[in-house]
Length: 127
Image (cartoon, rainbow, N blue to C red; front, side, top):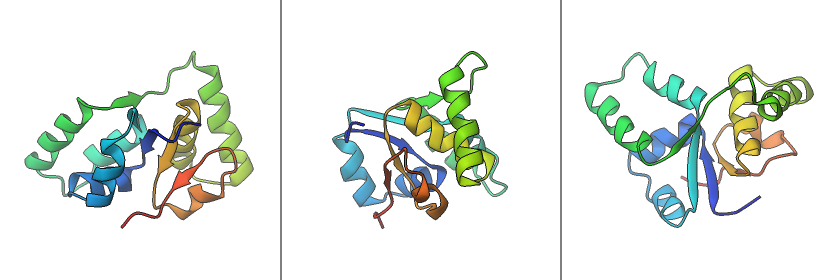
């Protein structure tokens, strides 16, 4: 797993877009940055989202890769199922974690339930 590849959980995306300096520094040196389709859906379906938020997020999405769920991506789908069953986590969390694993990336998240997954590295010590 490369230390310069990062997949951002929704909470990390929000912190980054709010100007979190620690995340900005970390990601500035990244070789690759991605988000799961779940984070995209969670962000855009937030009930209090503003047009400015949507515009900023759109600019952000132009600079990162979005990992979709494709029916023919058996490795990704299998990992989602494995993480959900093994770690008893919510399906959206399993999809995000499996997307990090599939992308060979460090998962950037404050979600404590994701830290218990042995097959991925989770970076959670940012403020």
